[in-house]
Image (cartoon, rainbow over all chains, first blue to last red; front, side, top):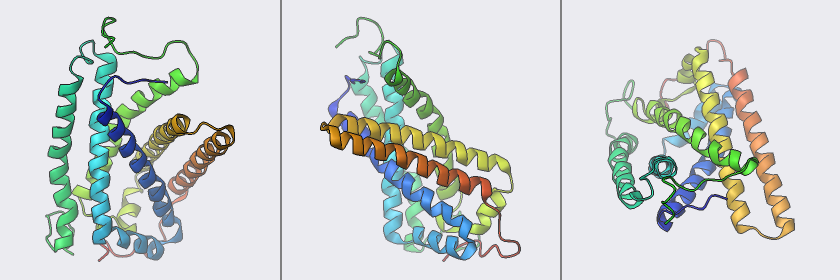
Length: 126
Length: 136
């Protein structure tokens, strides 16, 4: 079994975000399968995604996914880059910064409609 | 820290665990692109309430998107379920529970893979009744 030598928190967060993303994935596979039941049923399911509480959960998913991705790259650098292990601490800081920096604009697009703001990506307004 | 060898420790010998170790990394790299682009397309380029039956019908006219989503489905499911397998491995020690939970992981993987694959292959928009483009 793979035994990482990087910080315990980075490993724990990687595991927690992984499980969270997996749980979302299972729910998502089910809601997309509603396509087979026609537009009314499917669109009713999509309507749930517009609810504020679900938008907040989406934010958690996006944050978790970004962290898991960037930390995954860090893990691979530790594995395959000769100097990786030496810089694992620095890389962890970079991972956190990248996660936050990429999260903020995406979060804006997801949460703005909950406040009635059109972030410029909606076809004919809400 | 074992840095003398110049790179991180990795599993030696063949076997399933070695394959699993490499699979995480290979699938992970692919998933970075697949997942982040997917997030962008469905949450940023449009609002999620506009990913309606109509939008999906139009998108899935092009088989590229069906293949893209299927690849995302397969890799994410296998990557995630392999992780779940390892989590069970780490925390569950008694034989009975190990058998139960690891079997459940296998069955869930199969069921969700089939559900997603069947959806992607068989989806055919209802003619003439695509519904609204955005759901209020």
